[in-house]
Image (cartoon, rainbow, N blue to C red; front, top):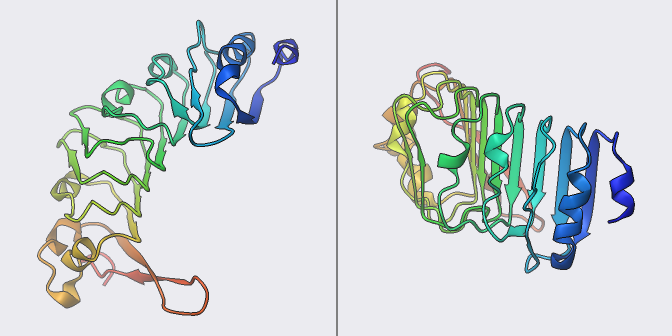
Length: 238
């Protein structure tokens, strides 16, 4: 970790197998990297809890990928005005992190994976995420509801929702996303999938009927893992 401090000109850094005891030294080293644009940190194991509390985070960070359980939501992330991509996994945040991220001016891609959020509901508030184009919510095991205010996510084009076992009801606020071009569900509860299938008289099909491309990825029974993508017809792709 002490040697990392010498990499003052580095623009891209990826470090794996980080242990809890190394958190402070890692933050001190990264704090010296004033030109850093891309940061990828992975903990040694899921049970490792990292404290990524920067005194001063590199201000030009554009891409962040953190796969680690954290002591708390990093309050330096919302201050990164150049941040474009944010990917969080295993973070286990109990409180909705969206309110802290909603004002990031250039964020275009947000991925919350593998219990990055351990609560049951996410709320995209009015005016939030003005430049976000891609949203991926995957393996958030307690997530059961998503609400989207009418003036939120105005630029969103791609929305992927994978393997969220408690999300059994389609978010009705998807009808507010007028610019959404692609919606994908994979390994989702049958209740949700059936509700958007017009061939099964799905009552929620009208909610996604304005989206040009809607797909469902499902497992196919076989001797090895196999998936197939099944398109859901809408008024724009018939």
